[in-house]
Amino acid sequence: MQFADKTVLVSGGSRGIGLAIVKKLAQNGANIVIAAKTVSPHPKLPGTIYTAAKEIEELGAKCLPIQCDIRFEEQVSNAVEKSAQEFGGIDICINNASAISPIPTAALDLKKYDLMQDINTRGTFLMTKTCLPYLKESEHAHVLTLSPPLDLNAKWFGPHVGYTISKMGMSMLTLGHATELKKFSIGVNSLWPLTAIDTAAVRNILGGESTAQKSRCPEIMADAAYEILSRDPRECTGNFFIDEVLLRDLGQNDFSSYSNSDEELLRDFFIPDEVADTIATKTTSIYKSN
Image (cartoon, rainbow, N blue to C red):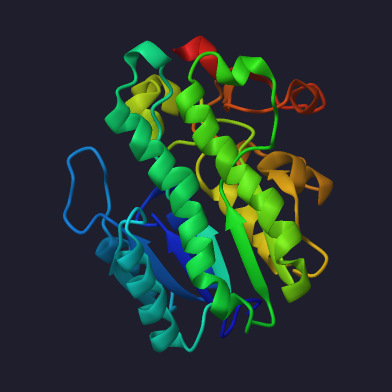
């Protein structure tokens, strides 16, 4: 049980990639804290913190569901304190919560702009900062943020600069915190998918069922996250991992089990051209679906 007696706090983990990651860790012994907003069923967003907790407990793990909007400092502090009280500390912080609105400047109202900055960049900073006293006490401390490789190619900024700077801000936090927190033996890394992942955001914002059919299931991100979080945090830090690239480096060559269909996959936002060119998987730009 690789993560026995380890406590993992995930933001926004009531569905999708976040839930898939913590279920994988729960299967390997981790205690899980779900810190997310959804407490009541939503017609377009399946799952709540309570249904997520039930899924994790059915795997034989302990789970503490906490309603938490990471835009608010008091709610984050409450979630972190309750987690530490329940399980005796925090070993792993997963910054999964994110807002997406990939639209041009003229169409982006300030409410959506502020939401993306508040959740993506500010929320990631706040969650990491608040967990820090407990991470310093852990012998296996990791921060894993779901954000892309840093790439200043103008093509990522031109179509949706508001969204892009919020995600790149998360990655800049990885870059800075990896250096700042290395002296405390805290591993700080980012993880991003090569292809679109079948989540509520993909279905509701990026094209519905047709896009979902060209996406992979969240379990590929869970498998990649497990590999990262299993590593020695003193040696594994400051990396911007891409799920398939990481798994291929570990010897995996068959990724068919992660696909929803035989259709050509959509390459996710922010994948550098040089990375896409070296991968055998056939993908087409996600922009072509918009």
